[in-house]
Amino acid sequence: MEAIKKVLEKYEHEYIEDYKPTWVKAKFKNPSDLLNIIKDLKAEGIETCSTVSPTDFIKENKIEVNYFLEDIINKKNVWLKFDIPRELEECKIDSITPLMPSANWHELEAYSTFGVKFEGHPNLRFFLISADYYGKFPFRKDFDWKAHEENLIQNIDDITSEWLDEYEENEKTLPKDGSETILHWGPTHPASGPIRLKVGVNGEEIKWVDPDIGYVWRALEHLVERKDFIGSIVAVERICFMDNPNPMICYSECVEEIAGKEITRFAKLMRVLLGEIGRTASHLISMGGFFGNAGLHTFVMWTMDVREYFLDVLEEYSGARIATACVEPGGVRYPMRDGWLETLEKAIKKYEDTADEFYDIFINNPLMKTRAVGNAVIDREFVIKNYMAGPIARASGVKVDVRIDEPYAAYDEIEMDYVTCENGDVYDRLHIFFKELNQSMDIMKQAIAKIREGIEKEEMNPQKDHLIRIPKKLPAGEAVRRIEWARGEMLFHLVTEEKATSPYRLKLKAPSVNHTMVLNDLLTGKTLSDIPLIYGSMHICQGDLDR
Image (cartoon, rainbow, N blue to C red; front, side, top):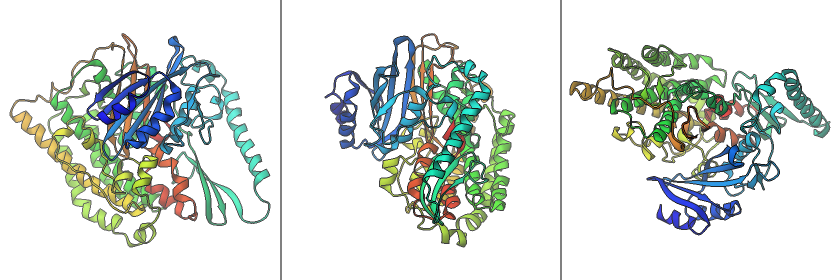
């Protein structure tokens, strides 16, 4: 990290400091230095942008732009800060997308919601938000949500007009003869969910793909600001219900960092268990959904059957199977009931008794192998350039896993290694989920054994050690936390004001954004029949994509 700090020290700065063992945090005085800083960091191996997070400091009349950059291979992270004017005419900074393509959609989101104009972006446009928000920048502190929501009919007209304008433009530009046209895969396709892929085709051949997202955009980052620090978990977990414990863990660790609180070892181990239960439930959907995209819904039912056992565990703990609210700042929400570990062991046994059958039906499927092996290969360079995360990166042999790289909860007590495949094709992007399910079973067994040992030695009290008190008011500060969500790295950036009772700003970054961003690269030159297969192999969740 010292080499990185030396690079940064060449530029005029307010501070450069160690944030965590693998993190450097720095704030610079001149936004005009950004591109040179990025070039120098790339020379040091920092080649990937995780996300871009503006914060609107309206009282100070400025927008602070935060960049979170990574060296995925060598586990180095850089957090850069720049202040730019808040006035829309002056609210601009250079785009880093030409240097770090993984920043592309993150800059578009920051432009659309905060009005930060990224000069030099290859296609700066409104993105994610619906047409009724264009040019209004809804995450700015002075945006009037109530007034906007009162104009319901006008908002609907704006959205409708955009669709009609697009249709008329296509009618003008598409050739009248030949087989070129634009098809719409979604947003009501049974495989796509609420996403529209605009697919330019010539006959069956795909010429280009333009993903259109935001159909279930809920402004989650703003909803969090309406609630107190504990109540915010009900918004945070809605980033995606396929794995809802892990986002709550990430958010809670941000709050605990700012509050200066350390939770109990028992609560940390419980977070491991809840996190792996959520990962397992999500991975089972991903395996079944891979085939479901192709219309083979029996496969989905097989995995859903096993998933029910793990939802039973969540229900016994929290009273709910999906929206569990089971993790909160200070630990985990509920004491551990007698017999709960046995219920979890029953679910683990159900999976392990079914695993061989899953392998034969799902992974060793000859028809699937014929279509998937060697298809839509993602190599190591593609992973780094576009920031493929989690299982998608590991399917290409890239050893990245936040549980190992930057342990949280009690993962520093767990014996585990990177689970990878080598070829990075559609087949490996299915196979990796089977491998990771087996790993999760082992992790849960280790955590169960440690909890039982702690109880037997009277070092843990499962009725009292689940939660510590977090102050209702927090000091001014900010924190960044990462966790390994079911689909890869999840990063939260939390900002608080002095004596705050609710978040001032919470940036939610999850991996489906980048995994959707590359569909054009993966699908161009393929045929229409490849869309469900390749799209399904990216295991995209609309919840974290749209937020």
